[in-house]
Image 1 (cartoon, one colour):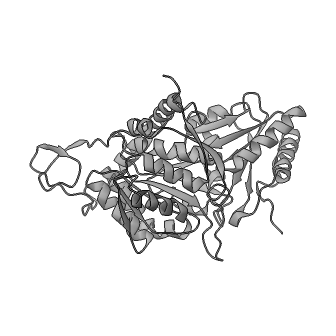
Image 2 (cartoon, one colour):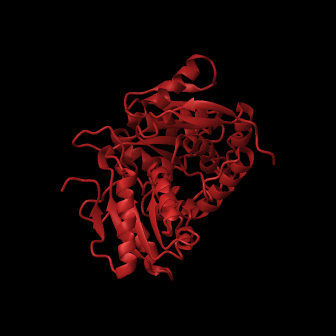
Length: 409
């Protein structure tokens, strides 16, 4: 399949998301503004006003209501989208679980912003990390181009009839959301063809006949009922079974998109960078990977075998892909842009250490908490992490497994 000719636009991350949604034939967008996400729904409302999309745009009084509206609309069988971040995402907490439990394939952009208090509007990953167990697929992007590409892919992933899992795409506040970048965009018709029309699976209704899995007066079914100990456990198990299938679907959608766009992000789950012969490596999510790649290149010119593993999906957690990518690495530094207070490290570190415990490889592993509240992570600090890794390889021991870097002690 030939790569499609594309247009180059100057867009910030929020605008790139809105543009992708505009092209994805979305039926309902429910919105409530919150910095630094507001530009997404603000720009999309302009598309609605100008008649560029045939979308029902619903303004609501809170983020809780925005997701409730999306859940309800999705239950009728239409394609829906919303966006939020920080306190807005926290206010959605209850409905996140209801949405995934009802198997409503909502797509949501999250502009990662620190949770209060004290009040902070800048980037860290504390908001989305809180929701890692909410039953949503989580995709973290490195730049605005990937934000555009990932939103388009997210509709195909969430709505896949083997999954029906709501999907959130994360981009870093201000670093991406408000920073102008060059973004290649596909033609409208190419995106519409790629995302297609949402297909509704059939389920067996209360009268024993097969009916579409949506709210339909002609074929009434109950969605999100009271579900006590007689069936609740089985329904939660079904969600996990869908999550186990998700890595394959994410890879397939990612690869199909790559064939028309010419852009790949690792295998869709992880993106290894110069890891083939690496002795030391960092692991991170989001925009920090771009800076880290530059540091890796600098170290390579000095003969230091450094590498990087960027996690693109955090849910589902790509266990075997991570283990395979780190099979030759002697020391690993996990970079957490959030913290789990009192839990001996950040969430990415917890899960990385957990999967390596049972793996045949056992690199030394250390956690670096960084960038909370939007604190910068310059190359100098990343170089410091790699120097620590070199020391760990030499001594074969980790003296301080949890460290806070770039903070005044």
